[in-house]
Amino acid sequence: MKYKFTRFVINLILRLVAHIDIFGLENIPSSGSSILATNHLGRLDPLLAYYILNRQDIIMFVAEKYRQIPVFRWFVKQLDAIFIERFNADFHAMRVALNRLRQGGVLVIAPEGTRSPTGALIEGRSGVSYLAAKTGVPIVPVALTGSEDKVVIAQLRRLRRVHIAVRVGKPFVLSPIDDQDRDEVLQRYTEEIMCKIAALLPPSYRGVYADHTRLKELIEANG
Image 1: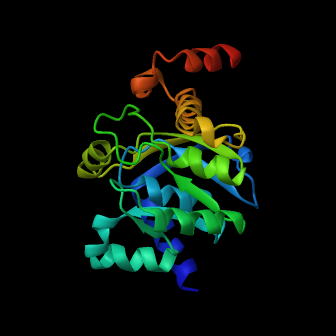
Image 2: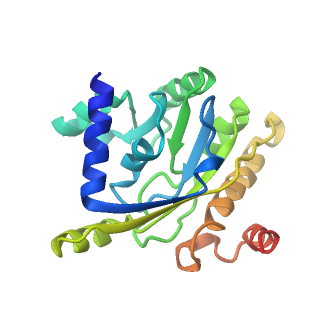
């Protein structure tokens, strides 16, 4: 009951402050394990998962700094999200997420690890690649536009709703990793994930991956 109420509050907030268009929703598995890998623009981004997904087994990481804020701590508890140390190797948080993925949950995570200061993609980290290769669950690339904090604040000051677009790509699976070439393979997998997100974004959002060879291949393949 608490989860449903919290999700109702989140949806109410989003409907009040934003007009949300979702493209490719059919690409998200309706059940079973999956990883939704998304770019990270603003503070509204995590809430979008609860607006889009009608599931109670969403796995979400929340930066440890928000533990000190009572209202955030309450929301995290109701949603069964996981506090994580973003700038350290938080093995406990990763183990919890790994176990819940294996139990059939859906992990929503930004490989960048933090909000982009410009809105354009910054370099992705290897945590998502590791979890995907370890579990073998499908990765669903998700691209967000319009949810930048500065855009949201500017629109709210004008008493206007912000326009957020969510574009969902087709799922794909990563092969298991050989420990011998682990770091190299994880880097290649991370670039694959980030380029698939970038391919769903307008050129101005593609950031450090704008000139990546793999992105150009994906764009060409998709016409």
